[in-house]
Length: 114
Length: 113
Image 1 (cartoon, chains in turn cyan, blue):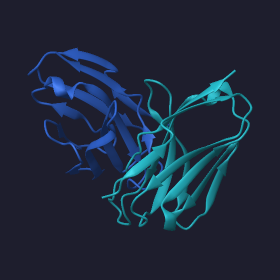
Image 2 (cartoon, rainbow over the protein chains, first blue to last red):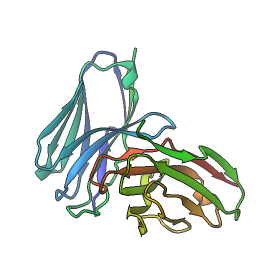
Image 3 (cartoon, helix red, strand yellow):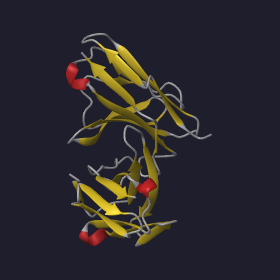
Image 4 (tube, rainbow over the protein chains, first blue to last red):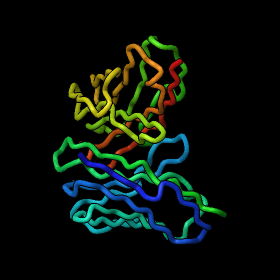
């Protein structure tokens, strides 16, 4: 069964710094991996979806990388801003079949200090 | 605007009183899913639907029912709510299956007394 770990659970950094959020998963047989953002008490917003055949995916100041063989993904945030404060969750697929669900990590709670 | 809507957003009820949380999407998505989110446990899937009239259990289906009579709607039914169903509930949809980009509703915060 796929298990997803995100470290650290919480992170505070000054505005302007570049930062990396980590995600590890136990089963490397994934179809893809998604990164989501969740603001307090709100729904999740998809940030990036990276296919198993890809090494990385970029959107604006965000870059997600995937090393499927080692069961790791990172989300890189460049030039962090207070508006980036949120919880970030990674979610690899459970397997390779069409109805295999995605499994969520518990998230990294990010606080950007003005 | 493409979106997933849920109603109600907040609900306080008492043990045993049947309730329904509605979910609707306007993106013609085939896949829909319900999750609950609890502190320390993260997001767990309750039920999902791959298409109209096709539903299946997720990881924590006990105490819940769903139906998918129309493509756009996927209501979550609690026939006899109990306090351990107090949680934050999310509906999500994706164009074909769970591997696609998932779009989430704003959440329903439920308190069962």
